[in-house]
Length: 243
Ligand SMILES: NC(=O)NC1=NC(=O)NC1=O
Image (cartoon, rainbow, N blue to C red; front, side, top):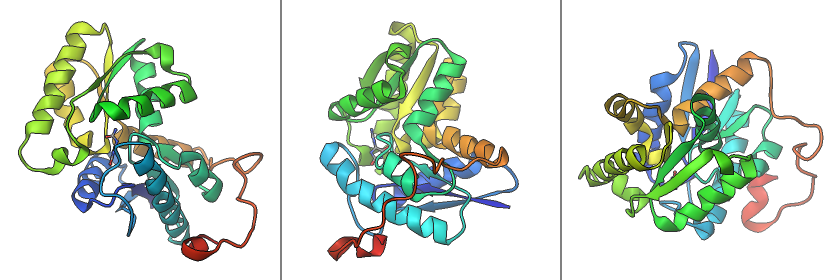
């Protein structure tokens, strides 16, 4: 049995539930999913400030997950907040949902589109495309112009906006695949793939399968070089628990 920790970096438990549901839907029979979110932080992540706050919560959860013996970790926010810092702190693999979805898209199509939430988060997705080397694979980025938590308000409006944007992206972008740009969209991918007739990729499920594969291959995060354990120094105040 292997235990994979799936971290919703925001503090909205309904979204943690959505993310956990998507992760469990694809987990292998021998995999248990531990869906968690920080005890304190930001209710939704919609910009650079939110990402900075969320990153501390990610590190707390990585440390807790290690203590619980998890075999790997998923960071289930499309900004992949705290990814490299989390890899320093982790022994198992740590996969962000943006990198997982982007990698998956490039294996299925020559170009992909991204559909995310607020326009101000588009630059975060652009930065990740550059960081991961996928700028030339991404044909277009779209924002539904609704806040992240609109995905959890029960109205279905955000889900319908995602659907309409995916239809538009298929019609206009010349992409062969679409990446859903928010952890809260995780449960929409299957139906949209069926309806649109092209891969609509959710990073949560993609990341869970990547962690399973890396663990099955016997790999953990490299501890040689810049992702070695953090240098030991006395962390003070609110950060003492990260020592
Ligand atoms: N682009 C996004 O919507 N990012 C996100 N903010 C969250 O709180 N979760 C996400 O996936």
